Each structure stands twice: as structure tokens, then as C-alpha cells.
Length: 86
Image (cartoon, rainbow, N blue to C red; front, side, top):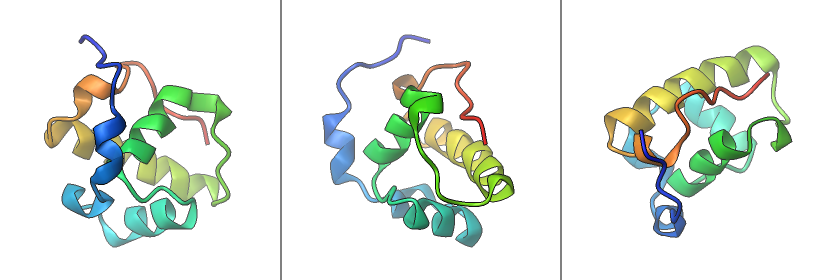
């Protein structure tokens, strides 16, 4: 997969468009990830991202969000092998 480099327009898209579960959405909001662009950054920066949530919640959120980003056509913005550590 070719990673799209410019994703600035994704900061205008709310995470609401991804239809996340309530728990995944709560983790995103608790960690100030409110836009699709924020979520893309989460995967691109990997271990550099500081998460202030329970590790089990982050693991659940990370898997679901990656799946939703791909399903909604934003998979080209995240690396294939990126799964943030919890």
C-alpha cells in the first residue's frame, strides 16, 4: 500500500464518521483524538504517541480504529504494519 503523505484535510473530519463503538470513541475523546487526522497521526507516530488511558482500552481502540479507517477508505494514510503499543 502506498502511504498518502498529505492528510491535513482529515483534520476537518470528525471521528463520528467512523461509527466507532462507544468505548473506542470514549478512549479517543479522553486522549484528545477528535478528528480522523488525529487518528492517522496516532498510527504514523506509533510509540511517540503518549496515551493517558488504560492499556487494555487503548488496545481495543487501536484495533477497531485501524479497521474502521481502512473500511472507510483512509487506509492509504496509515502504514500497513503499524499497531501502536499499549
